[in-house]
Length: 144
Image (cartoon, rainbow, N blue to C red; front, side, top):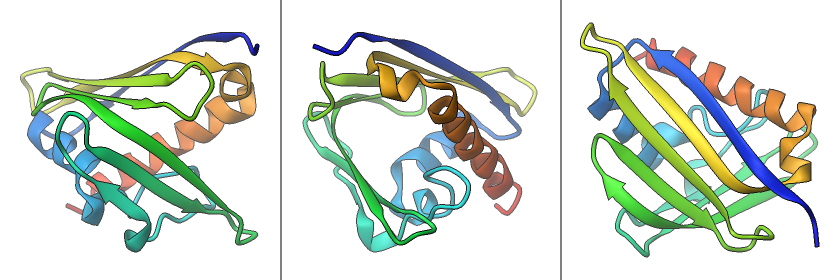
């Protein structure tokens, strides 16, 4: 069995919690930033059934044309405060919890906490890729 662990990412965005929550849960937004730099996530490769037990799937296309599909199930939805999904196909059932904290000045702190994270996802390259996705999210927000 692979060792699992935890990861936490925190980012402050210049946007209200409701807008950030909507960006994280609507395909027409996700297509613009989901995945690391150098990848795309076509709109037709995103499934969002925004309810507990609903599917959350994204297919990321790499620069080489290869694809990776993330398949998850929503566990909790509390707009605009909290969003939780579980990826049952990842060993241990990786759980991602995203919380949106209104800082009261037009900014929101978004904390992404993952548990049951396999070692491959905890490697420096994987964490750096996730960080570029957050950078893409920031860039996208400036266009709204």
